[in-house]
Amino acid sequence: MAKLQPVRGTHDLIGDDARAHLAIAGTAREVAERYGFGPMATPIFEFTEVFKRTLGDTSDIVTKEMYTFEDKGGDSLTLRPEGTAGVARAFISGGLQNELPLKCFYHGPMFRHERPQKGRQRQFHQFGVELIGVAEPSADVEVIAMAADILDALGVLSETTLELNTLGDAPSKERYRAALVEYFSDLSDKLSDDSRDRLVRNPLRILDSKDAGDRALIADAPDFDDYMTEEAAAFFAAVQDGLDTVGVAYTRNPHIVRGLDYYSHTAFEFTTEALGAQGTVLAGGRYDGLIETMGGPKTAGVGWAAGIERLAMMTGEAPALPRAITLIGLGDAGEREALRLSSELRHAGLTVELIYKGGLKRGLKRADRIHAAAAVLIGDDELARGAATVRDLDSGEQVDVAITDLKDHLAAHR
Ligand code: ATP
Ligand code: MG
Picture 1: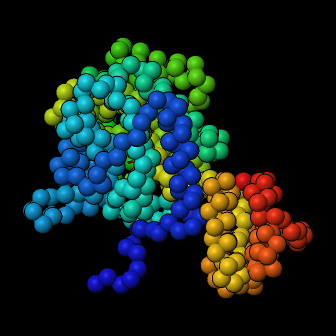
Picture 2: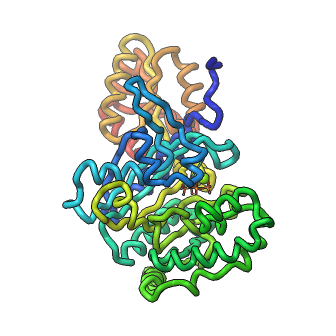
Picture 3: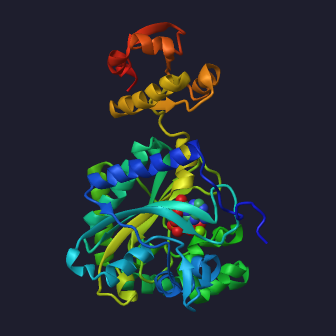
């Protein structure tokens, strides 16, 4: 039983790691709000059916990766592996059809039982957005542009490539699927086991295979563009046009497939060379059939999710905080005055580290460790004069400052 270790594939976020994480989510939120998106938080577990129906019985997530358990009431529940299903469920159960377009973002932990490696955990975090109820290509353009703006605000856009594809509409997909089945059936003895299985269950996903043998066969597979209906081609052209208009660069990658039936039209990923094998930092697409599949009214949707841990590996540490002022009270009266001052200075916008006990030496040691800008010493002598000793911890210079002037004296450190 439980050794006191984190579960394999999970991580504690401590100190700078936790800060980097919050900074990424905060930046993403600011940008999303500028696009008129608002927050949505759904539970981290749902009835298993929610994910089975949305992700489909053939997806990797449903077949291999879900944390599913029976609760004490006998219901089958699953820890959410991704965010869209919960948002779609909330849309239906909350009766939000009259709130369209629904523009929301979410942030939180996701759970997938996969083989842990760099950039791949069993509990990881995503920031994601959904734009529900808009069938126009400008919605696709907008969520993609938002993704680019977020990556830019995080300083990593230039290290990523936007890979763009279209899955067309249902008739395009049907025709293309038939062409793929015909092409790969002749080669089925050369396909990997996984892809031979996909040939029966979900042929489009063969295009997504990472197997080297498969990849060679995929290179000569039929080209989707030859099977696209005029409407689907026009939709894709409008998305590309819109991206050009807002100045978002992309490359076409016909192998980006979200292999589920209700995905249509736009599919995209922001990928990077900076992270090795786990190079997709943000992925999304249009899912016009999803809400209907779940039993709701036919409703268009487009969205994406970004992996925060992968982004954090690219951004490194969060922006520096303002340096602290250390308050050291000596003796009972000094400690009381330090406590009072800590409150006053914080209310004035300063970052204050109060030394609880241990005197001058311990206080200065702590100040050094947290790289404080200044130390304020208050002992009996100082109190008698209504003053404090302020030591600049960079220059070592020490001055006497009237307690009433402290706020102004330290204002530069806000
Ligand atoms: P991958 O091909 O890497 O398995 P995916 O297609 O399963 O990705 P999505 O379901 O599209 O990923 O999730 C969106 C993003 O969430 C990914 O691009 C990635 O940044 C992040 N992500 C997905 N799974 C994990 C994981 N196990 N650990 C860390 N981040 C993850
Ligand atoms: Mg995966």
